[in-house]
Length: 295
Image (tube, rainbow, N blue to C red; front, top):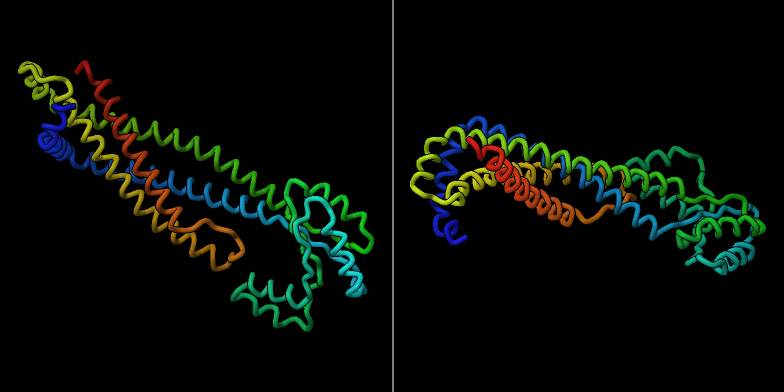
């Protein structure tokens, strides 16, 4: 370790020299690594966003209860009281026709103008019931036994689809990261083997002079790190712009979708990309040195 620290300047200089020897090949390797890591970042960001959406929807699970149109205020209040007595129900709130209309205006945003073409308010009053998601089945069964309830709407299908998407993205994410790791290791190890072959005579001379293997190997490990970290920086920049674009595209037409904080997503992505770049660089360089040990 002391040898590496004392000769770090020399190792970096040698790494730069080997990179310049195959400049075009190394540039292509950096771009390839950057593109691969960028795809990883996109998969991870989609995974995080969908996971956050599922978690928020689970915490805000709701059931909409529709009742007979001719029911009076006393009947509605009595129904709300009966609903709130059920186990698993956190709160039951009456939503009037006007409030339902305003909510739809907020959801539609700029497209809310289409509501102006309607002759009258098309929405019905209902009771919004906030529940514990794990008790949804039993609550719905009990609601069906309450007199005066015409229809019950829940978001089970939406939650189930989101769970399936999240599970698929999680599986795909792990598989993709594994594939990326193998691809990056192959690219970096190939570059290192090529550099070793190009510097074969120089390496033989160092060995004849008694230089330790750490002294000979260090420049090639640094070369691998330069390649992958450069690719990681490119991937990070592309990811920042892409995630910002995705957020801008989603928050406009789909303001009701719960999204994690943009800053947190970006910072986590950049940290993971750079960490993977570091790991892939070290492993790829070591593998390249090991595979070329007889050259």
